[in-house]
Image (cartoon, rainbow, N blue to C red; front, top):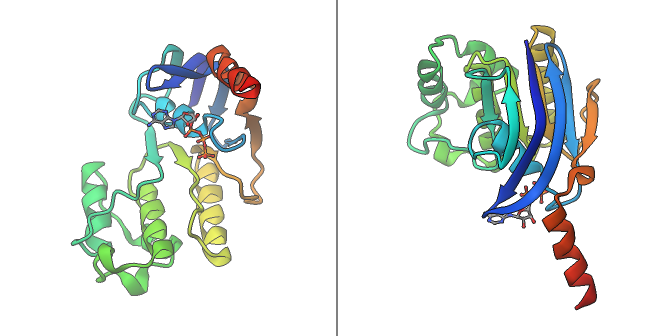
Length: 204
Ligand SMILES: Nc1ncnc2c1ncn2[C@@H]1O[C@H](COP(=O)(O)OP(=O)(O)OP(=O)(O)O)[C@@H](O)[C@H]1O
């Protein structure tokens, strides 16, 4: 399994943000996107995950294989931790939620409604959902936001396990996860229109 991104151009509100982006992520590999705030990491991840249409280029090899976790947790507040995970497992045709509960230290919280979890607990539940999708390619936008050091370590272990099983991960993060991951700075793909904007600002 390999996801290839070829000459991709992505934008927000019709304005090009990145252009000419090419990379590949295969089984057992992680690629970390770097770049300053506003450089286009979220826009790129959303496009790769199929949540928005590319302005040009192709994403191949990942059809129906991507599990996306973005800034919004997307949890159902009235459902318990276990019910949230069971719901997502059923959507993806899976049934076993026990490994996900264990991996993200959620076993003591199974019956608590998601709406009454702390921010870090919500994030752990949001990430645990990745494990019940059964999908190969995890596309993650700032997955460690709100996580304490112990939870970051749980997350890193879950990613490592996913890679060891032949999965792949593409993520934007400013945190060092201790993974053997390649890094790609998206700044070098900044689109021409975005550069023009910056130049205009500089002259004001
Ligand atoms: N909803 C939107 N409509 C129009 N422009 C947007 C929208 N969201 C973001 N942008 C702009 O698109 C550009 C890229 O934003 P993006 O969120 O992809 O960057 P990022 O690298 O993920 O930033 P951060 O590190 O702050 O999360 C920025 O200039 C931003 O202002």
